[in-house]
Length: 258
Image 1 (cartoon, rainbow, N blue to C red):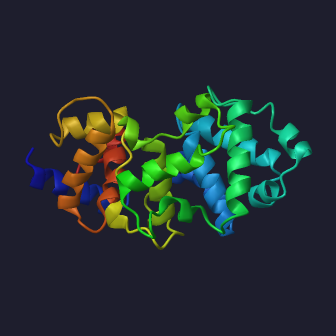
Image 2 (cartoon, rainbow, N blue to C red):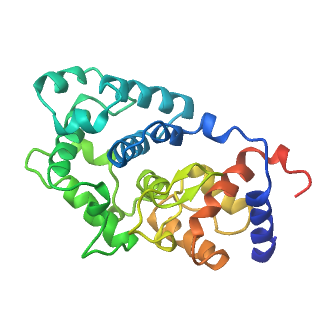
C-alpha cells in the first residue's frame, strides 16, 4: 500500500462514525471525570504513568488511587501530610509500589507549590520541543537527592532512547481536543504540531503492516520516525492518527467499506 493510500485509509477511519466504545474502555476516561485544570492534570499524568497492561485494570487501579485521595487529588496533594501519605502506602499497580507513590506525591506537592500547572515543566525557555522538553521534564522530576532510582523506570526520557509512550500519551491528552480519541485539550502553550505519536508494540506492528516503518525496536528513534511520516499526512496535527491506527489494529471487522 502506498503512503498516499495509507493516508486515505486512515483519514477515512478518522472521519467515519464507528460504533466503538472507545471512552468506555480507555483510561482517558479518568481525567474526564474531573473539572478543575489541576485535577485533570494530576489524574491524566498519573493514569498515563500507570498505563501498561490491560486497559480495564489500568482504569480500576487509577479509580482506586484517586479514591484514596477522596477524588480531590489537587487538594490532597497541596495539603499533603503524614496521614495522607500513610493512606496510600498499600497502593500498587504491577511494579509501581509505595516507594514510587510517595515520590510522585512529593514531586507534585513541591511543583504545585511553585506553579499553577504542570504544563510549565514541559516548557524549555517558554517553548516546547519534544526531545529537549521531555528530557528536561525527566531531569526536573528526579532533581532531588531523595529520588529513588527504581522510580526512574516509570517516567521515561528520550535521553535513554525510550519511546516515552506514556509521556507522549499524557501530552496528547492534554494538548489536543478531540471527541473521537477523548483528548481533553486544556493546555494551550504546546503546539499540536510538536507532539510525538505514542508508540508501543501494537502501534509499531500496525505501522509495519501498513508499510510506514520497518519492524524494529520500540524506541525514541522509531517514535520520531513514525511521527515524521505522520507530519507529512497532517503537518498541524500528526498525532490525530493515533486514533485511526488504534482502530485499524483492533477493530478491522468494523471497516469493511473503507
